[in-house]
Image (cartoon, rainbow, N blue to C red):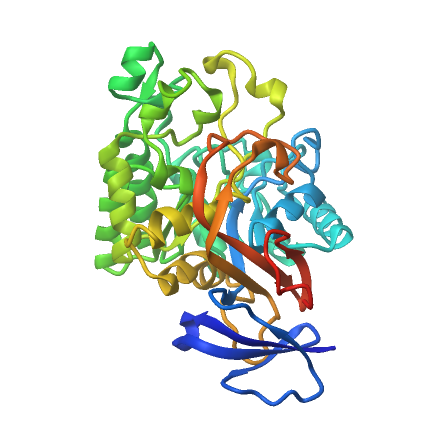
Length: 437
């Protein structure tokens, strides 16, 4: 089946395209991009004025919770949330039960993804067996089974020696090592950012240096081994300084920032609802200077990707005292509206840069297909509605969990449609003119 997406603004930074073009989809592949393309037997979908056609967005940091924690999320519900949020692919972290540290768990996740048949799923394997920081997982086995990276996400790799060995082995397979950067001795049992807000509320705090020490360690070992080191959910200005220095001297370091870290600060701990556990995440919401540094890094190119750190938790788990609640929030369905509203419409970046952050660079970092509308590429397409008025409604989220601090937020910009492998898996019911997809 051929379809011609006609007359939309096409933004494809990998090919230097930003203008009104047609996109021809032939089956599950992009056939051509250009002006006034011939029909060639294709059905025509007129893209309404104001909509933007992009290569499919890739979220390189999500928790799908399956196997073992299906009460929070499943591969099916998580990928349904992904396509509703404009993501054609997600990379899922290994902190499942059992941990994704062997080929059997990887195969199970991929089988569930094939069964759901929604967004593409790229498993990420564990650095160590059981993510316990003791014995290195069989990285070759994980790679062969389909893992695209390794991490002990949620835990920093226990020792510098283990992280070095992981980098050496992962480097042999061209896999990035993704690190939850944290110094455990500084973190202790902290639950918030160390600063005025935590002190006022009586919460134990962790400073930004707690994260930055882990970033510095990883960059030094990346320089030593030549391996690709990726900083997950960066939040502290000292971490950004370290990344910039690493890049300046040619170290293979990349980093991501989550939407909650470029929109919120630790003031959310106290207002509008004090001790709201939907403001509890790790790394924590930090002070304004850190938030502003993340925005600056996004604007100047120091930050490579936006990733959600989608971390679903059941209502009962979050509806407890702040100290006892688990870290994390859902993010797949709010990332694009937050990015359009707070980055593009705020004048911080232009649309091509946003597409780099959400599509081009995640594909490059993980070495997976996508990030471009080049002929022959997978027909994975995200269509944006930059002027759409969006109201976040937690109860309406497609994720199995609803733990978000953005409930009730009104934002400018959203997702019009999501196409995966040539199939339109989400069309925003608030828009007209795309029914032919």
